[in-house]
Length: 426
Image (cartoon, rainbow, N blue to C red; front, side, top):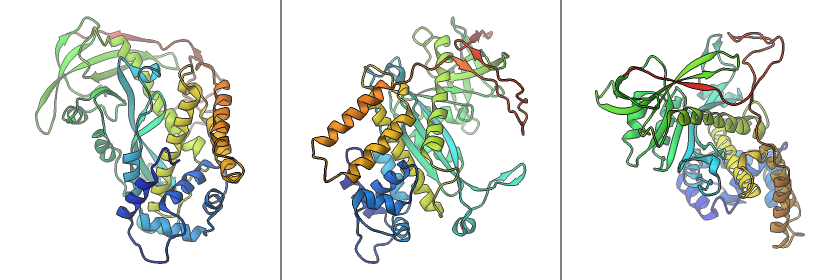
């Protein structure tokens, strides 16, 4: 933990953002409180006070820990995420995380269900749905991930009902020149394109776009794509980008048309067929959210009783996921793709190692702990999963509650990703 998060940085940020310093001197430092919270979320069961005692030996009640967390607030955790999260993929080693020198990154949002406790009912407003109010208050999050490693790069946590776009636009300020952003139709808007192009560092993107957005065709390229001009509705500014139309075969066997916008304008260096196939990598963001919300989280609801502590819990889950990503990286080394190292197996091993280290701290020498970790990572590498099957299943439910068809018999389609470029007239 200390190698990932600097104890000095944690103490400095906590003192800067704490809301109160009243009361008796703290029994544990801010760093060990943070480490205890991350350690707690990495465990399959138990309470924070028990896990903190196991890790540090300090005996504090859960109510005392809750009060300590309230004095820190959420701003400290957001600042810590901003300064701690960083890329781990290397161009010369992890080829699947890159496309012609660009680091493949994705941006998307997700929500978290928070318990209906009295403090949350008093301060929060539930989302309206087609069947009245939602059952639980939704805590929103927007995140940028390395698609080839499932490692979080930047995160914004909203506790005031912020929209996904409100949180996503500040995240885009963290983009670097060698990143390639791949995003779905929520971000396929002219205002997002102009925002990306206005950033101080050159930014490259591949966005899926709704079919009803207007663009002016300028030139048809030999690979089937087109150079088009789009306009910002508010400023009336115009810019030239590249547009690709393609048909992709769904799980049902039907062909669906997709439309992509990119500022990779050279059709020789970045052919349309490569970019259409590259867009499929965006699904790795959904798998990263699955690892975070299903495999790592222990229940369908966040365990915290206030919005601020719920935001802290999400921040610690993000930090825990980043730690697991680094363990997968260490286990994979250079001979195994990172995503073939199982997230669940890594998580189980991480839980075992951290628990064993805390319980046997006085029995393990300074040389024993690194040796034990190396053996665990070697064992993890030997259990690497085979490459993913090229298989998809239809979108259907056995007991449908939406417009999806009813699933009567299981079926699947095997084979490579099927698509074809649509040539538009200039």
